[in-house]
Amino acid sequence: MSDSKFKIIAGLGNPGKNYARTRHNIGFLVVEALASKSRLTIDKSRFDSEYVKARIKGKEVFLIKPLTYMNKSGFPIHKFASYYKVGMEDIIIVHDDMDLSFGKIKIVKSRGHGGHNGVRSIIDAFGKKDCIRIRVGVGHPGSGSTKDVTGHVLGHFSPEEIKILDHCIDSARDACLHILENGVTSAMNLINTRR
Image (cartoon, rainbow, N blue to C red):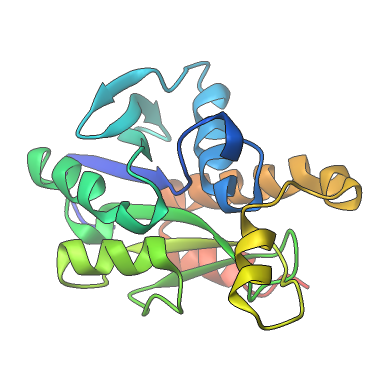
């Protein structure tokens, strides 16, 4: 992380009650968990986002939920970053990932979007890909049709998934905290090697 005055942790998801507890919204759930750990609620609005400012691990952090729908997430995050002069390497994006089994966490930095529309939107908005991403596994439906994939990510968690959901959210939250405290390389070494 560089020395921008602020850091941004943005969870990706879709606004509205219909999407609240769906796999695609796991990013929202993780930033909400970060807020509640600091005894805060994400209840302020600016730049098409809900946000709260928190002091976490000695850093000033904006916890952000873009409200533009997943495939346009990049624009509100970019507006926030421009306004508060936050460098892209000081932004952590938390998002669902179908290429990882449910509950698996992987941290990547400066990587392509891997077919994720929210991440693609962020790379498009910034014109580069220097952010840190926490990929939270939501598993894959198995078959290849777009309809199945969409149904899967916009679907609710299965009873089996619900059993480990809190643990999964806590792991992703802790990954964010580890990055803030010890930097991304240390976090990658710790988390990406876990079985």
